[in-house]
Amino acid sequence: MKCTALVATVLSLLLSSSFALAEGKIPSLVGKWDVETKGGVMLNSDKESSITHWTPGQKILNGQLEIISQDDRFVKGTYTSQRGSEKIIGMISSDGKFMYSVDADGFVDWRIVGKDKLEGVYRHAKPSDSVVAIGIAKRQK
Image: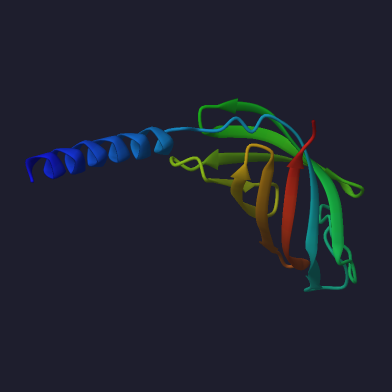
């Protein structure tokens, strides 16, 4: 009986310490990421904004996310598509599982799937247009 209690205690300590170590790991996201996004734009006026990457009727957007620098959980970079380029900033969650970022006119909530893959949801709503899209980013090798 004492042996079972001791084993249970040791296992409990090992598991809790390994979870604590995993929780504090902040992944490096620096690099170039190819992004394919599926979504669409809703016009709220005659035409989309000049900094909107989406056009009416468009269903897929291919672009590149480049994380230029990372200081602990804070990242800086650019997002570029055929229609232009925008600066981005973001924060990685304390558990290292998400990155929340903004550009000039919208927000992306990224789930960090692995060291080379992100899944994101983009949204913006402006007087000219609104966009919602879901994308996959794969780190270039």
